[in-house]
Image (cartoon, rainbow, N blue to C red; front, side):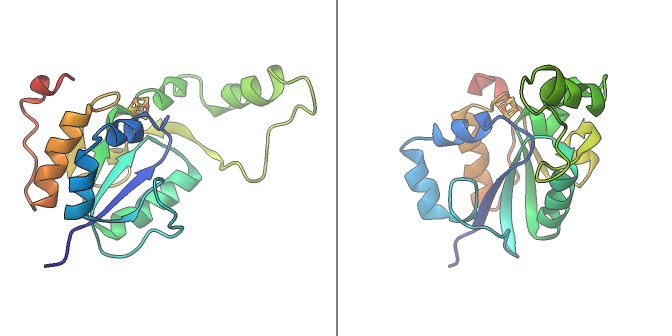
Length: 177
Ligand code: SF4
C-alpha cells in the first residue's frame, strides 16, 4: 500500500512550529516509515507537488507570495492543517495589523538603518495590508493550536492523519498546551 504523501510549509512564522516537529525525536523515524515526505523546509524539494495527502502549514498569510503559495497548496492537498497559533489566528505576525505595513517597513528599513536606507522594491515579497490566519484565505481541515504546538500534540494529530482519521484534539490540555 502507498504511504500517505506528507508535506509541511512555512509562511510568515518563526520556524518554532517546525522546531517542535523536530522534537518528535525518535518518533520521526516512525513518521518517516509511515509517510512519504514530499515537500518541506526540512528537505530539498523546490516545487510543491500534486496530490499531497496531508500538509502542515506554519505561519500567517502576510505577503503576496504567501497568498500565491497557500492557494496552490490548497489546490494540491487533500487535508490542510493550520499548524500553530500563527496559522490559526495570525498570532505574532498579526501584531502589526493595527499599524499597517508602511510604518513597519519604515521602522525596519529606514529608521533603524545607518547605511543606504531604503524600502526594498525587489526580491522581498510585498506585504499584504494585514497578516491573516490561513482560514481567512483558504479552507482549513484541521486546526492544531499552540505556540508552538507541543511535540506530543503534533504526534497525536499525525498519528490520526496518517491513518486517515480526523484528529480529536478536544482534550489537548493533556498535551501540555
Ligand atoms: Fe513561531 Fe509560535 Fe508562530 Fe509557531 S505559532 S511560528 S512557534 S510564533
